[in-house]
Length: 110
Image (cartoon, rainbow, N blue to C red; front, side, top):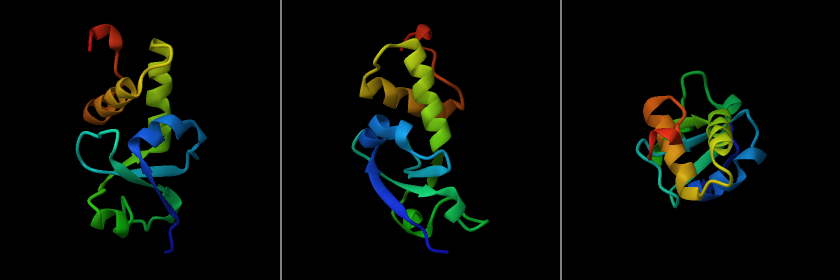
């Protein structure tokens, strides 16, 4: 199946996540993300039933899919806790969510 993909940095993703389609996923490295990491944005409907990421993304080591709805929800949750959170705080919230499958609570101390 032919897929349309877009390469973006995590920094770009943090700044533009609200403009992404909720049917998209981001193929990321299977580790803590860094602001300058390059990821691939694809539409999940372009994947074969047995695929989590595209073969091209997999070859690049981008084997951890992360849904755009989750990214948008993590950032929205953080913005309810902190006005204008920094890129670093957004990144910390994203990594926390990926590690714990839960929103970060900044009242717990960072």
